[in-house]
Length: 89
Image (cartoon, rainbow, N blue to C red):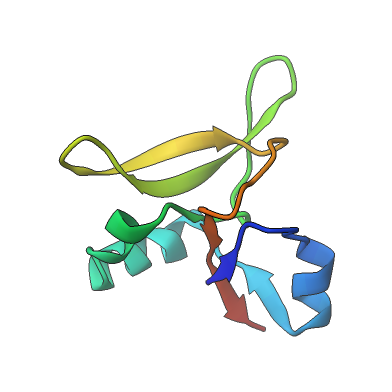
């Protein structure tokens, strides 16, 4: 799981990784349910295109008292709090 500072899929690819998909993200949530309470975890390998063309990605996060799965705008400024799930190719 990489950090949100300067996330770059091309660099991930060059380093031998690929972004996790939503199915892989959900498997992380199942295997390590407390992890998303520490920081939100993003699956850049599953993009959803909204009406109007903007793109969103799935994120495991912590709500007020419960774990959750959200969609977040892909073209955002990902700050250092986010982590990006990736798998070796």
